[in-house]
Image (cartoon, rainbow over all chains, first blue to last red; front, top):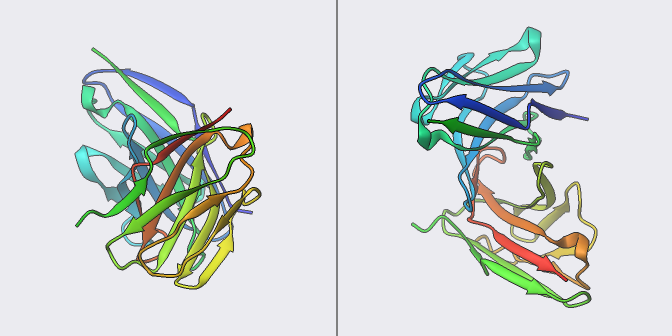
Length: 113
Length: 111
């Protein structure tokens, strides 16, 4: 069965520092991959997606992610953290044609001033 | 364009009571989903629908029921509420089946 693993339930960085949130998937077939962000007391918003085109994907708010098939990874990065980036981030995967998403357990990002 | 709306925002139920969580989308999406979110567990799929009249179980369907009589609405029914159903419930919709748009959630407490 397909699964998504996010390494680190809580990541803390200083404002202006690099943000790196890790996501690995387990699937024999490269899936479609997504990062969602959830701000406090809100629903999830799509941050970016990989659907088998370019392996480096740019999203909203300066975030990007790189699909690496050899590492079965889809890590999320942002060069310089901003206080407004504090939120919970979810990685999700969908086998092509499955019409469903499988979510990782989430990573809470804290930004220190 | 309101997107995905959910009602109520908050609800407290007593053990054994029943309720319906409402979900409506105005984007004419065929795919709709119900998830529950528990701390540290991510989102778990309860039920989903690929179109009006068609529903299927997700990962954690026990204790819940759904129906889909129209494209717009996808209510989730809890029968005989139990403390284990205390959670935040999210409804989502999609054109493709994987790029999903989420509602704001319903926070349910069963005591």
